[in-house]
Length: 480
Image (tube, rainbow, N blue to C red):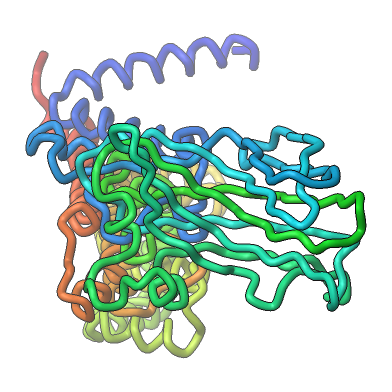
């Protein structure tokens, strides 16, 4: 048979195998779950634009947004940002103002302003019944003409429009020393409702509430303004305002809410699927490979080789696995690759004994004696004859061993021995427990998703393993 004719035959055999496998309900369920998690892992960059532990998306401990569909909208809010740059000015000699909006668009206007003020402001129609948990913003002001004698003073102000009445909610001076060109760089001011200076200047210290909850206490029209007080000279003045924006962080967020740092839990779950699957598959592949090699050599060669390999296997089997894992990871370091190697090289002992038992039976078969009589060497017999008869057992144990590796990594991460630079489901549980233990705020949307994901991915591989066992084991095989 030519090589070209073998390919369609192998494809046909694989097609028949998949039809047989997926005809088993358990295997079909496991296969569907595995496809879903694999899709989640591969499409993580497309499903979410955020960094799992580097992008603050909202306030801390925000529940999922869909919760409002069950509890009603009262008391809930979402993220919203001020938009639309405009300019107001007092009378005077011309001032050129260049503002860079938060959406990246440029805005340029020539206004009055000598011995007066220039106000750059953004507007917002706040639609939610619930107050925001926090607001953050920024502004970069550059005034090349200013100096220590004639500086530009700046402040931010919050206004609210209600029934034609304008109410000033807060005034905060972010540039107390003024803006002048003697500074090495133009001052960048961050506006944060958690800033104690803002709380003090706006006289909110005795309220016990966050300024975001006081300023934006109800739906309505709001204005966020930057007011610049200009010096008398020069007659023509040019001011640059960049990155002028303010974002309100609501008390709900996304599909799975936020954690104690304001990071997106769904993003962590999606990227955690990648590493959890990577750990499970690679560690299991290492363990199955080592166990297969040890079992084949011990079973076929026997005598001294069998004795040495099996006594070493027995020694590792009697050592408690979790304490040994903890010691090795603590000594080698908590890198994700160290964890994979440790899990892999400590997960082969049981499989090695199973393979050895099968090889001890196979090596006494007549076809092995015939191969020896025809001059076949040890390597040829092990690969062509013995391994071909235990390959089905290898597939089954490969599927059934992946959950152990995933749970092993999760256990190490939960105990604080995981890689702190990456996000896995086990590390998510460890961070959730740590935050809940220290703050008394153990949120269900941070704990249940990774725990449920570990359980489901383990179930998927176990169901696939039982499906494969049903196909390869004559005692379990069903007659169709």
